Length: 321
Image 1 (cartoon, one colour):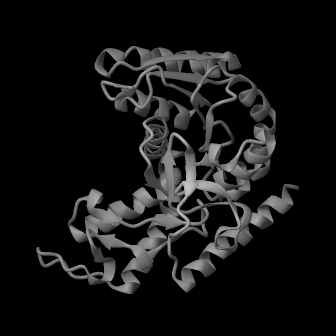
Image 2 (cartoon, rainbow, N blue to C red):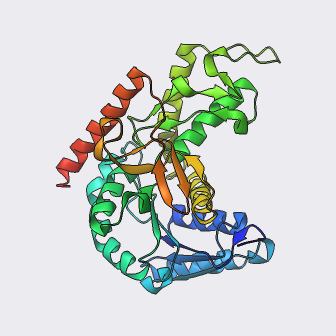
């Protein structure tokens, strides 16, 4: 049941009260993503302060409420658990460089989380989110549709913004996405990219904006790939956009939206990829995240998808996963 934009009695638990976790909680409160929002962090002073600051503003949001604790009781009964806790990415550091540290953290967290919220969907935001999705899937023994990551949802938003700005069109009218790794080997699926119903290279703006060229699209892909590095260099972390992206995924789950999103699930033979988590368009609903098996890729795009899979497989082997 929806009440003022919020699913009645729904509970979102966010693990980690750092910049990403707090931004996600803030976005969820403003957007009404869930009726109840709970923040968990082992740093009691930090989680208490974040919850207090957020609670002070609830007069100006909807009906959602916010609580928090350093005790895992905070996640009890959650319908969705979003994991943001982990070492953060530093300037010059790739997402895969974080793998060993954050896998060890997940080993400590995951069994207890599943014990407290056995029916929840688990959404990994901590990087490297594709590697951690495989680890969480194995540690939890939950099916792939219940343990997945934000994947390239944020990368896709970055891509659509750049294309929209260049074309002079609303972002909502740009239909394009990033697939593969949420990282350096992710790639735009140009073969399916559209503005409205028009293929990207065929678009002609009514305001005489020059058409896209293939070389320009290559530069845009590089800008998307390097966007996080630019933000991290300037302010130390990315948090607002991923907070919004996480809240949007939560809404699709709790609202049973059947929304198409490029989240990262552990693939079971799709496109020749098995046991690796990669982002492909997926249906996100009250049944979890299920890849759209009919999504077409051009031959060169399949090669790039397999390159992403090989990169992640190498990282998993290094970690003994």
